[in-house]
Amino acid sequence: MIAALIGVALGVALGLVLVPVLLRRRPTQRVSFRTADGPPLPHHLSEVIATARAAALAVVPRRDGFEVRGQPLQPNSHVLRVAIVDASRVTPENMAIHDSDSYDLPLVVALGLVPLFGPIVVELGGDSVRVDGTLDQHQLRHARAALLEPKLRALRDRLRR
Image 1 (cartoon, rainbow, N blue to C red):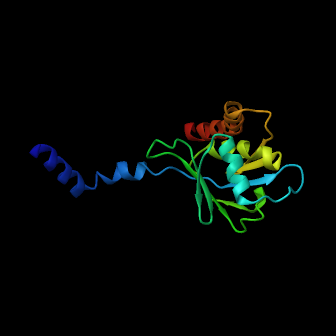
Image 2 (cartoon, helix red, strand yellow; image 1 turned 90 degrees about the horizontal axis):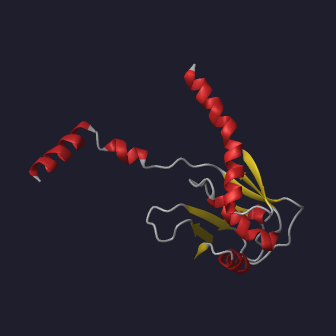
Image 3 (cartoon, helix red, strand yellow; image 1 turned 135 degrees about the horizontal axis):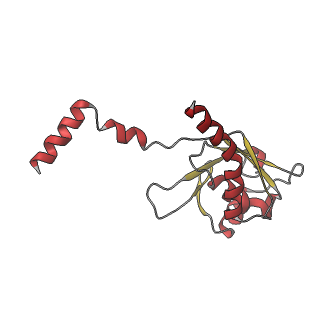
């Protein structure tokens, strides 16, 4: 026990404890939604939340919008926060989506909102994925991976040089 405390104290003194703390931060990406087939009819925030819940999403209402938790029972779960300016006129375009550290939660949320707004285009860190309800969550993840694969191969090739 004393040896463990001495080891921790020595690690703190040398700055070694900061490395795992810095590695715990997840990279984030810019996310935005827009409708694919023209401007949709605006809906009330309560309708948006009800539609998301009907799609089995873990939605937590907030004063200025809502958040969706990826795994509600896990303490370090991914969270997608959505801010709304006018609760009576919500459309995908006026949802202010905070940067997300999840690669698939924005796609899952868009899939849950398709019955209300129709097809939604999700902008994820520079890539666009059309979510129209024809693909399930698993297939959407594969579509996202297909967009990332050429970028990762190019990065790998650059690092090998």
